Length: 77
Image 1: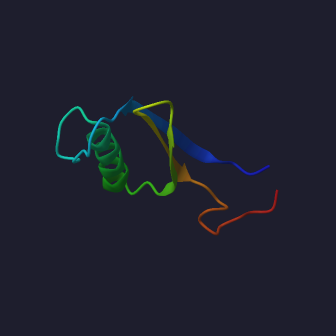
Image 2: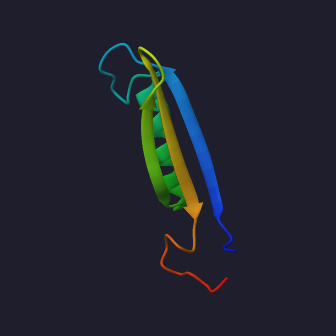
């Protein structure tokens, strides 16, 4: 079995209007800050997905890390 060295970050928050990533305390700022952290360490982003949980609750899931399948470096199981 492959060794998936991944990290999953789930960010959940209320969105009531258009947000800018430079507004502290918003979901967009939290997502932007996490992506900036990954970029500063050279950690690849494997997946970003979103879902709504009811009216205005947004869930953002970010999967990052070194994945041999994603990087094209698959080693036989």
